Length: 231
Image 1 (spheres, helix red, strand yellow):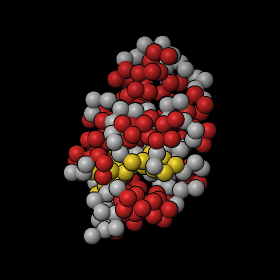
Image 2 (cartoon, one colour):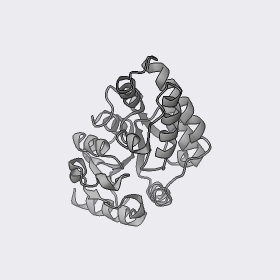
Image 3 (cartoon, one colour):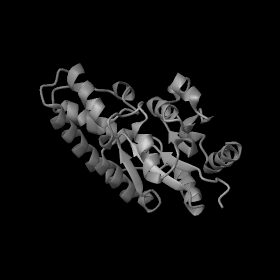
Image 4 (cartoon, rainbow, N blue to C red):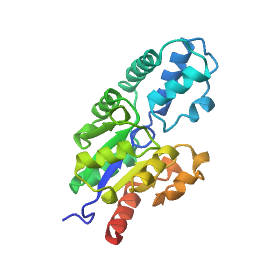
């Protein structure tokens, strides 16, 4: 029996397992430019970190008064993003080590993301993470995106795990809030250091304030073991 007991681990994808946010920004910038919005900056983009692609484009349509239908914008952004994702997605090395550590112990794992299923599967296949992360839930498959708990609850259901036995890894405040709402423990690794004091991160069982630069697979694993022993 693993020292992690019946623990199941659910990973957010973008900004947590892989540094895909630059690709999302570039896909968004190109899409908006095609509709006459030419001043979209990284600072503008930061407010959408952790929010599903569908909700992001809905906000853009309203904010920038874009005439194109929402589904057209969504399809454009997803198409541009997939082109970038297939050729240039970087896996955080310590996250890859963490996945490998858990896989070696037979821990149940899933990915629950605000991205489209096509984008998730393209990234997992392109990075080789699909060998260990076979259970995937997209926000497109549930009623509500993060900060609602739907994607995490669906991931737990597919893994056959009780929410109380699940630990979520997240980089964004909406995701940490979703984990808390789902009744799951959370390891938070803020993508944006300036957001580390967001109240949503205060609900995390482990907050790695310095983000990916401070995250180590061993420290996260040791925390999981201690957490499993005390739960």
